Image 1: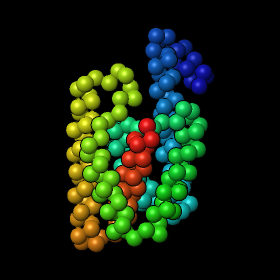
Image 2 (image 1 turned 135 degrees about the vertical axis):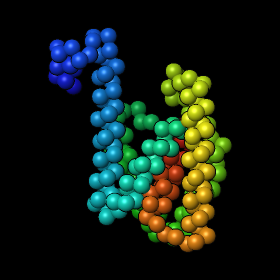
Image 3 (image 1 turned 180 degrees about the vertical axis):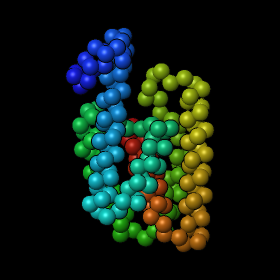
Image 4 (image 1 turned 45 degrees about the vertical axis):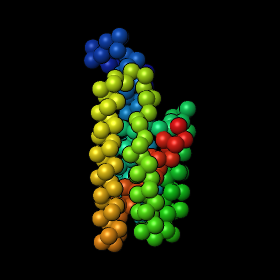
Length: 176
C-alpha cells in the first residue's frame, strides 16, 4: 500500500493532506472486492452462480442503506462472510421455496420498521432520511416480488438470492 501511496504522492496525483483519506478508500475498495469475489467463488464452487450474483447485488443495496454488524478486523469479515453465506445456502437448500418466501416476507415486514444504523457519526440528517426512504422502497419491492412468486409459485433463482440477502442483512442488523 505504501508503494502505491508514494507513487501517487510523487506524481502529484494526491496531496499529503488527503493521503490518509485516499489510502482508506483504496483499502475499503480492495476489502469490498475481496468479499464480493469470495461470495462469487463460493457460488461457483456450489454451482449457484445466479443465486450468488443476486445475493451480492441485493445485499449491497440493503446493507448500504440499513447498515448493521461489522467485524472488528477486516480479515475476520473476509473469512466469515463467505463462510456464513455458504452455511445460509445450505441451511435453506433443503427448505421448499414457499417456506423461504414466507420466512423472507416476515423478515421484510420487520425490516420496514428498522431504521438505518448510524455507523458513521458524520451521517447528515438528510442522508439518513434518504437511506430510510430508499430502503423502504426496496423492501416494499421485495415484498411485492415475494408475494407474486408465492401466488404464482415461481421458483426463480434470482428470488433465492434476494431472500438470502434479506435474511443475511436482517441478522447482521439484529446483531449490531
